[in-house]
Image (cartoon, rainbow, N blue to C red; front, side, top):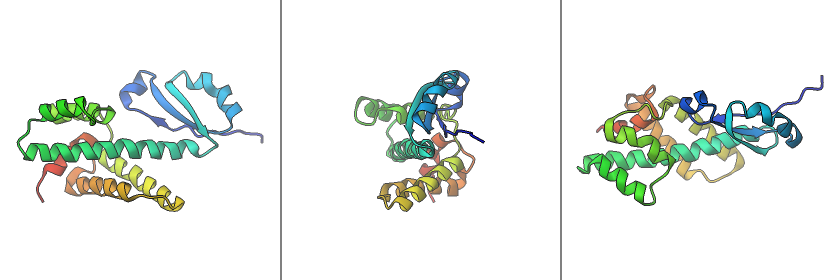
Length: 179
């Protein structure tokens, strides 16, 4: 009796976890959050109180949707760029110097230029799962989800082309496959 609860999902990747540099999205009572902050600091670099219990997981779905949406957009452009004969390094350079720069491009660049998918160790089937949870959350809230449905369809296409256990950066190659 008398237990207290927070939800505290994490973002970032295994490398940051090993380094103690995770992001925590904490839902729960603000005073409890503050009392737990020293514990969270043992393994997380960024700790954000996002609202009441349950808000942490909703925020993680929002975060993953935006991240995966950006990745899908870049992956689709990279697949077309390859088909159009544009060198991947040139596309990366142009995007990085313009409006396409950011974390998604940084995580995809090693795959786009050398086919090294290890910079983003998250499998396609898990990405699709998160996107399906996001679209369900948006639907339950009566929120707009046109883009979310398109992002989920893009990942579904990658999975259908044999990429269920592929790492997310491999979406570039999966989308480049014809038929």
